Image 1 (cartoon, rainbow, N blue to C red):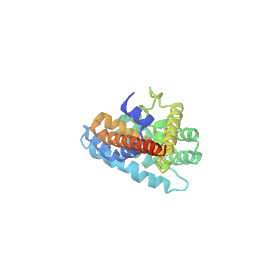
Image 2: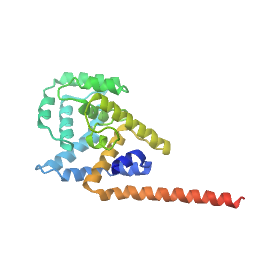
Image 3: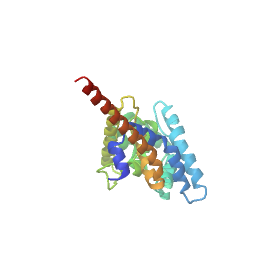
Length: 243
């Protein structure tokens, strides 16, 4: 079992919070590993736009939709942060602007039915379930996780990755089950599918790029285990005193 798989199946809410908080540091590490001139700045700028600006743009529209310019930029972000396939950048630009808007309106309107929403988005050229999920995650993070390789690989039963609607349904179901577990252990937790996906990506990439970062999570787990043991000891002592 990989470190991130163990984190996914049994990591505490506090460990998940810390993993989520490390995202900014880990995306910088990822950017630093890009050899292409200007690649580091490109990824950091694109990621800030995707994580902060694009959600406000989409969510500020009624009904929600994404524009041709935005989907082109989103594709560049996706390929810069993940596997680079230059042909996809060209192909996505071939979509007509009015079709991009109408398809994305139908997709967002279909939520919370993820299967239907993905189907509505994938009528566009070069937009498969993974890209469709990135659009939905930006505009409706409470419903959709982005289908990132690094977020899926640690989840038991998902490998090998296939990027199909069926696999996206399996992935999103696992993410929702994880949210249920985290909220059961900490009722104050405010997790969304998109947050879970980001935390998983961060943990997975930390394990590859700088494993020492994960010590912060481990320390928290150890303290929690120690506190739990102290509480159990106190309860045993109290029961003994009353006998």
